[in-house]
Structure formats: C-alpha cells, structure tokens
Image 1 (cartoon, helix red, strand yellow):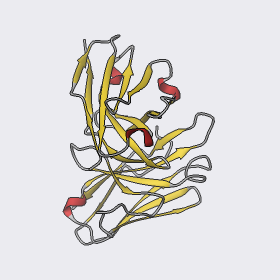
Image 2: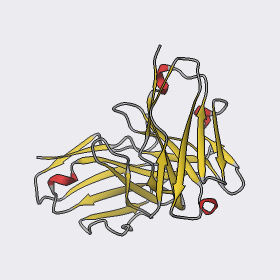
Image 3: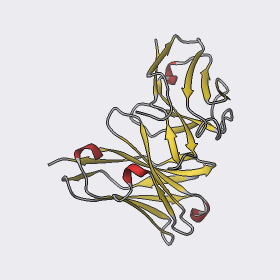
Length: 118
Length: 111
C-alpha cells in the first residue's frame, strides 16, 4: 500500500535549521509530486511548497522563499524539507503528502512535530 | 487569515444532515477543482472528497461535495459520532504566486 513515513520529532533553538525526511513506499516514487504542509498548534493547514521527485524541480510558497529547501533522493525514495532561521512561530507539525492527481493530496505522512524553543 | 473561507464550527445530532461551506475566488475555486480533507483528533489529514464531488474508495456515501462558481460545500448525512473532526477545503490557486490554498477549517461537533 502507498505509505509515507516521516522522521521523528525535533527540538531546535531559534536561528537553527531543521531537516525533515519523508520516505515513500508502495508506488513509483518519481511519478508523483510531493507537497509539504504545516500545521501550527491549534491552527489550520498551511502549504509550504512542492517538489518533483523526478527532476528535483521545486516551487515554494512566497512566505517561505529563501528559508525552505526541498530535495529528494531517488535511491531511497525519500524527500526532504529543510527550514532555516527557525523562530518560535515555526513550531508546528510538518506533513508531506503525495500529489495523487491535480493537487489532490493523498496520502499524507504521519507528521513530524518541530518545536522551536530557547 | 486563510485564502478560502469556512465557518469555524458546525454541529449536529446523530442522524442529522450538516453542510460546511467554503468560499474562494476566481483564481482558486473558480478555476480549479476543490478537495476536502478530514482530520480526526491527533491524526494527519485524510482525503475525503476530490475533484469537487468524488469519493475515494472507502469513504462512505454519507459524504458528498459540490461546487458552484467560487464556492463549494461538503454535506454529511446520517451524522455519526465518529464524524466529529476538523474539515478543510482546498484548491490550487492560479494567482501570481501559484500555490495550494486551504480553508481555515471547520470543527464539526456531534451533539
């Protein structure tokens, strides 16, 4: 079955960077784009960007441009999301989600909690 | 503030029918399909409705979606206690900064 498994929770200090991984299985990794979405505590969903695992091209939400980098490793069917210059407002659960068809996100990873605290 | 507008809360009793609205603009709902996601407490979102009104395999036919112009809605009939969750609408936005946009979410309470 199609599955996305993310890396574990992280605690970071303000100004640091975090890199979250998302390992895909059960389908052809390079055939589907991958999105990253975050959710702050008690808040709604916020789109961060998208990566094409085939060629590695990316598109980021304007809010995160300059701070986010999405990459992939086709040998391990894994995508990565790195967020730099962390601040307390970046405390959130970060999700990867496959673009099944026409920006339809399915399935989602289990989420990775990133806590930014001094 | 979310690009798509949803009511923050909705409620109903078991067996009732409830609807959740989602309002957007010509650059998102008006020109692209709408998806709905269900997020049960403490879990990741799950695709509930795609392409305005299609149900993925395994989603009960109690759930239905519709779209008209720049608005969409999710209807849940025969409400059950396990339907208590947060519901999010989403669509691709074709504006200058093309991106996926979400509604702020609607918390559904089953009384």
